[in-house]
Length: 118
Image 1: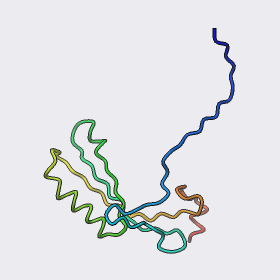
Image 2: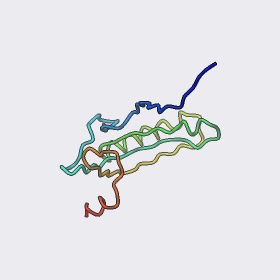
Image 3: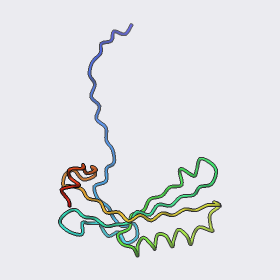
Image 4: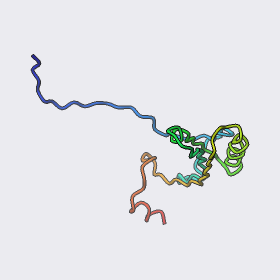
């Protein structure tokens, strides 16, 4: 017979966290444009909408340091589109400007911090 007792158990977990970004085309690091942690970069997302479970698995995300690199990713994706069996192909290009404060990188800014930026 097992004798049990309720105790607090603390588990340590490890996750992959983003500590930086590199361009997927030219491998140039995406760095702040000034000393205030202001970034400008592009996230290119590709996927298809065909029927089946594999449509949710088709999402690919790429980082681009400039418009030229983002367009190169898009051109390569569209150039290879006819080589795949999918009926629908989607590409999204998002211009990102992330504002993060020092050691809190990755944390969304609070309303107070946003007003202090103005």
